Image 1 (cartoon, rainbow, N blue to C red):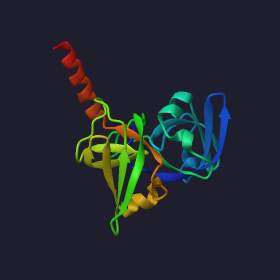
Image 2 (cartoon, rainbow, N blue to C red):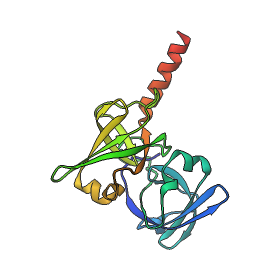
Image 3 (tube, rainbow, N blue to C red):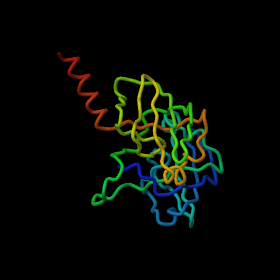
Amino acid sequence: MFTGIIESLGVITSIRKEGTNVHFTIESPISSALKIDQSVSHNGVCLTVVALDGDLHTVTAVQETLQRSNLGDLQEGDFVNLERAMLANARLDGHLVQGHVDATGECIAIESLDGSWYFRFHYTPTEEHLLVDKGSISVNGVSLTVVEPHDDIFSVAIIPYTFEHTTFKTLQVGDRVNLEFDIIGKYIARYAKLYREVY
């Protein structure tokens, strides 16, 4: 379980394919503090650390993860957002993020507002993936507040600190992003669907 508060940026130093799996080696300020088998969020995807070497750590993405997320788009030299799993006694500064990507979206507009930015995204909505104005969503692992959701489009507002310390500073129009919808909303939508089926 994560909070969507990014700890560090990592840089992909190596991408190695093995069958349908892909091994990503990442250099970051937190890599030396990691342990084998530890769960770490990479752009919002929960991956297990499988190897360590100083300031480098390696994780493996299986085919299903690559199909559901934007990890397959990554190249050597790209940045990734990193967050270690939350501590049980820690403050929940963002929102409950599982590291299980629901879908990808596409950045369709970036608007600079002289000190902050609006990023607009297009996605394919479903009855289980609901957005509400001022609700929570994880975009590439970053806990954000939904702004003006309409049909298949929503926006988020990015403050300078988030812009500089996450992959939002490199995000371009046309890029795919990982989306994880609020777990509470997903449970409510599921229960509502079951209720309609019964009654």
